Structures are given as structure tokens and as C-alpha cells.
Amino acid sequence: MELARIIEHTLLKPEATVKDIMQLCNEAMEHKLYAVCVNPCYVPLAKHLLQGSDVKVVTVVGFPLGATFSCVKALEAKTAMEEHADEIDMVMNVSAFKTGDYAAVTEDIRRVVEAAAPCPVKVIIEAAYLTPREKRTACRIISDGGAKFVKTATGFGKGGATVEDVKLLREEADKYGLKVKAAGGIRDAATARAMVEAGADRIGTSAGAAIAAGEA
Image (cartoon, rainbow, N blue to C red; front, side, top):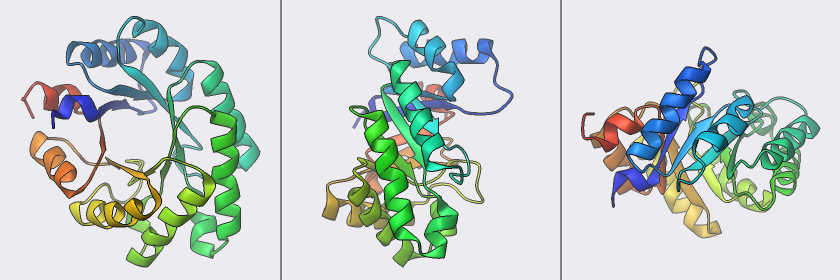
């Protein structure tokens, strides 16, 4: 598999500037990457810069903690779609999940999915905070909520993607027809390929251009 076609070239740092977003989009077009992933305020700019290309625009909802009100997440998703985002990466309410309030987590996901339709939604579970059993449960809840992907991490938590987590998520995701996005700490081609071999369908990385160019 050509790595470039599954890479979401990511820039979510709070200090990112317009110039940085312009560079991100130019790199994504140059290397024919799948998408850029930017904070919501930069969706209109990214969409404008990428006009005429095949590069998609992905944005985040409830980022990075996932602990805001469901109505706020839904509004974020709706607004992002109105600004022509192609895909949504939402953060699961990890606190509610760890508490065991699975009904609330499912409803949280469902509200974002409905608000974002027809954009596909990925759910970031912050796998480093979950036990293996909880990771499996999260896949079921994501499916129940109508989302299309399980995603490993925000990159802002205590851990990123691991081969072991991707293997586990792939095994569980297959039961529900979900796809897997590996993100968090993927900075070179060897790591990206290891994630693909473990079962990742997408790679989220800030090193997308370097990986595609064979420099990382």
C-alpha cells in the first residue's frame, strides 16, 4: 500500500499560524496525501487552499479532552460540515466511559454523527487510558453510535498509537465493520508501515510530508 494515500497530514498545535496551515496544505498536495487534519477555525482556509485537488479536509470535535457538552460537540460538527469539512474526528468522552456510563457515550457519538451527516466520523478513544477490555467495549459503542472509525489517540494524551493497540482494535473493529485510524507519535515511515501491517486503514501524523517523501 502506498503510504501517501492513507496519510492525514496533521497540524493541531495551538500555536499553528495561517502560514503553517498554508505550508501543510501545499505539502499535502505536493505529496498527494489523503487529507489534512486541522483545527476547526482553519477548515475554510484549508478547503480554499486545496480547491481543485483530491486532498480532503479533516477536522476535530471536542478536542482534545472530549469532555464538553454533547450539544456543543454536535454544533461543532454541524458547523464544520457547513464549512465543507470532509471528515470529523471527535474525541470520546473518556471520563464518562471510564465511569461506565456507556449510554451517555453512545448518545454523545450519535449526536455528532447525526450533526455531521453525511461526513464520516472517527472516534478518538485515547487508548493509553483504557484497558484491553475497555478498548473492545469502545469499538462496540462506536458502532452503536453510528461512527465509521475508531482512532487511537489525540496526540495530546499520555500515549499515542502502538502496534499492539492497532492489532487489538483491528480485530474488534472487524466485528462491527469499523475502520481503524492510527495516530499519535507516528513520525517515520517504518512506524507508519508497522501500523498498516497491524491493521490501520489510516495514519494520522504531523510528519506526513517527510514520510511520503522518504525522508522519515
